[in-house]
Length: 563
Image (cartoon, rainbow, N blue to C red; front, side, top):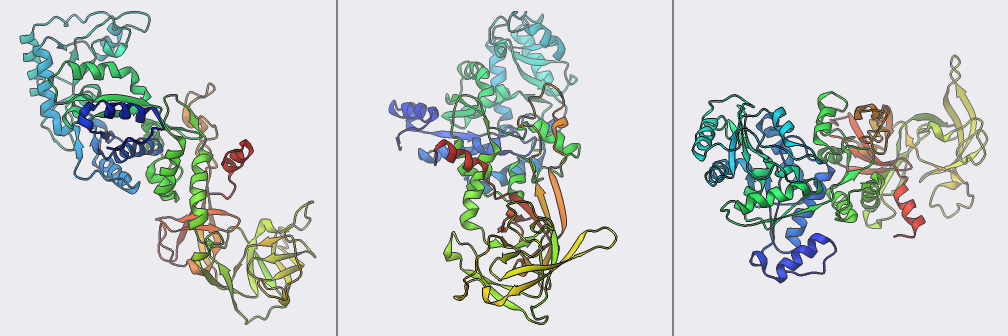
């Protein structure tokens, strides 16, 4: 076992356990998602932590589905979770488990608690249980069914299992302390009746264990040594320990809590993400605006960039909000070295070079990535009619506008210097529809005779050779940095950004991108990083903008003196 110097409090705990030979020197973790939705970036942090800890200490990490609530669970979610974990680069080997694997054993443990006088069947309704529970300043009071005999409890629990009672009519509760300062110890519910078919066990069961009961038992059965979870379960730890201490379990895992990931301009609740999907605010769980792993994958994020992000934010006990700019910085850093540079015009303006021969086509050299010379170069066609960006021309340019204007010169990237001679407008609307320019044949990029310099350089594509594409520009899904912390609007959807998606359908890209496969990533010069969307098919290319080129996080870190 390795004993590398720790860098966070979880490693400190594990190092001490290894020093004292606790768990016989084993380190065994697990990632236990509930299959009631798709995983999001917060789960990615937990995945990286649990699988990463296991790898660091030459241990094991299980993937276990907490499938104890069949009314909200679907096979679709199980499949998506497995796909996401693998895509992130982690492998559970032969250790794929389900809490439902242990339903028989968990039931036996419940019977064990009843026989020892530590659990009872309660007939109070859910609302009555809440009323009896008390508050943080007022102790709870005993259920009138708390002192049922062991025999009566065993009989009722067996009849619950046999399906004699309706949903919500009875529950099994732990008998702990109704006056405990920790509300989770005030006789918590261990089992509830739910006549719902389970996606794995069918109609075998009509009673299902609660998470707080099933989880420590599942950890123990699997030999988990360190049960790492987020801080909202810190108040549940005494119950976790109570279950372990009051049952004849196979091993005694330890629960450790860390701060969950909160990301600016998004929400991290699966319930709220589900609402966004089901009410049509987004186009499915893999919508590129969603913080789900499948959404990030479709947008163009790489597993390496997400793992890098999770590593950078570290592990802490205190909750905080991470700026989404940091996540964007991670993908920019990676793609800056890996993504080929290409030219794409998103809002085209037609340019005619009057002194360039009509039938001439030149194949010009263009480097694929100046940051990575090994990526080589490509040939791009240059002809008499081109497209440039509408925003790169101003008829009446403001001060410090160094792009194209009447009588002004600019360089075309990888090509020549051109000069605007004439502007053509729509007679009815006055809209600029075409520019007529001239070029200087002695100014081609790379020519030894090139001596003239100009301040502006524009990207472009040859109109006769360009490939048409749809470009989808994404912005933050919410207008507020913390959409869930809003005193003005109780409904978090009131903070949705109406401009989170802009579709541009009249875009033109280099011909070399024809047939680009989904998932391919590029830097569109001066525009940002883009990824081919799965919607692409044949000639119908669709690109998602991953991030723009502006790196606000790097700028902030530079100002702070950080690397």
